[in-house]
Amino acid sequence: MSDEPSYILEISGLPESGGGANEGQPSGQAGGRPWIGMHFECCGVYTRIYRNRDGTAYEGHCPRCHRVARVKIGAGGTSHRMFRAE
Image 1 (cartoon, rainbow, N blue to C red):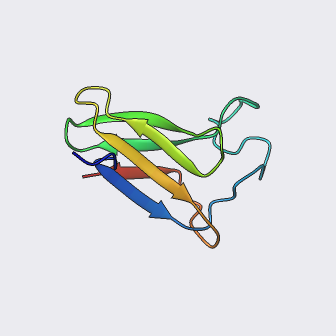
Image 2: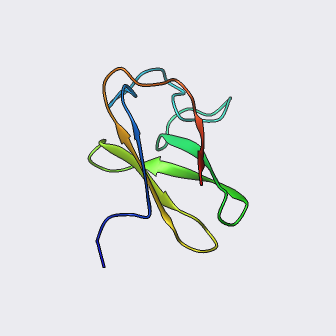
Image 3: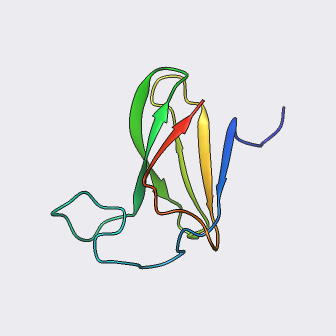
């Protein structure tokens, strides 16, 4: 079986570092690890997935079935913070 995750979402342009003080944080919180919201349609659940240590992608999994989601970070992408894995 392949080592590739079940879901790979490529989003170019999300900044690899920094941005604002609250980037990836709910309103009113500063610091912590940057995250994006992910709705896993496989099980109908929402969770946060966090930026990896290398700063190259947001990685996480469905809390119920453990399907993997990986959102690559690149130049010229999007400012959206909520995503859907089908």
